[in-house]
Amino acid sequence: ESNLPYNRSQIEVFFKALPNCVSFTLGFDVMGLNPQDEENCYCPCGRHMKEWRKQFNLEGIAGESCIAYCGKNSKGKKMGPMGLMGHLTSKSTCPIHSGIKAYITELYSNYKGGFGHKALYQLNTWEYQQA
Image (tube, rainbow, N blue to C red; front, side, top):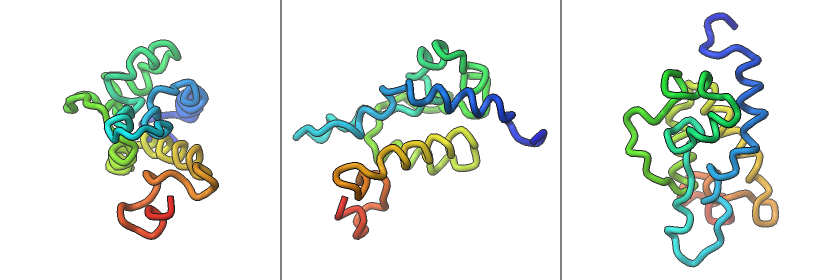
């Protein structure tokens, strides 16, 4: 455990707080006709979620000085669900990002009658078409 960037208690604190970060997955829940309505996802480790991290005392885990922070080089633009899942996949070596991806996958695996949200699947696959 000593070689990891986070200890067990930090991981537990972060993931106990994550269900209270409802704004980071808003794009998953939008059912609008305008595709831009889905562009309301932010990574909890990015600059737009700073107030949530401060509220739950997570700046020492995913704030600007931490390895999980992903707002340094980003423009901070909104992402859609596919964009957020792609971002989390690209940061798969980070235990925080990997855990966020697992959380979203679990949260949206029974979406729309049990098949799962489209963002959980590769574009143009059979599963994506069914979702």
